[in-house]
Image (tube, rainbow, N blue to C red; front, side, top):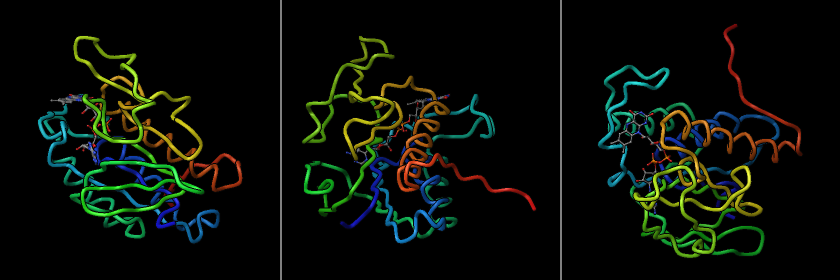
Length: 202
Ligand SMILES: Cc1cc2nc3c(=O)[nH]c(=O)nc-3n(C[C@H](O)[C@H](O)[C@H](O)COP(=O)(O)OP(=O)(O)OC[C@H]3O[C@@H](n4cnc5c(N)ncnc54)[C@H](O)[C@@H]3O)c2cc1C
């Protein structure tokens, strides 16, 4: 497999998930694990957002700035996590022991994948159609969608995060969803022993 975990989508949920996974790659339970994120931010809805009500983010921050800084943050602090930019996920299929992911440029394989591409319809990723349902926490007139899941798990090895998991569209909720998925994956890597990653002042 090219990756032990591959995250798709570089918005609030995807980058938060990648940061927590990246922060664990030096832990013994993650030794040798390969992680990556596929980013395609050009058409990201966050580009038009203005954030005033998010804890830790200065009021008046533009979504476009967060997108840019989030990627820089990820690359600088956790360079072991591979960042694949300017590729769009087109198709997912199941293979022995994981998934094949076809982007606009290449094909990758991964044991686990996290789909965090937002709740916008129509949903254009082939291979996941069977899991698409109307969003349960958005106005029906907006035609938002989500993937069927139980606590972010669509099926073994396939996770969904953020608004696409059925959460309401608030930045902190989507970020928390991505981080939650990351800790679920780390817990699996840690043989089912619950884990999280905290840095402390010494
Ligand atoms: C105009 C606007 C204003 C907002 N204002 C606020 C606010 O004031 N406060 C607040 O809390 N929240 C606000 N939000 C909501 C907040 O931005 C969202 O809830 C949050 O970004 C959702 O996170 P997400 O990760 O689910 O989706 P997104 O952040 O949308 O991330 C999805 C990412 O996946 C990418 N993607 C999509 N399809 C593919 C594909 N096939 N392959 C690869 N990548 C793909 C997209 O380009 C995008 O980068 C606002 C949103 C908008 C649009």
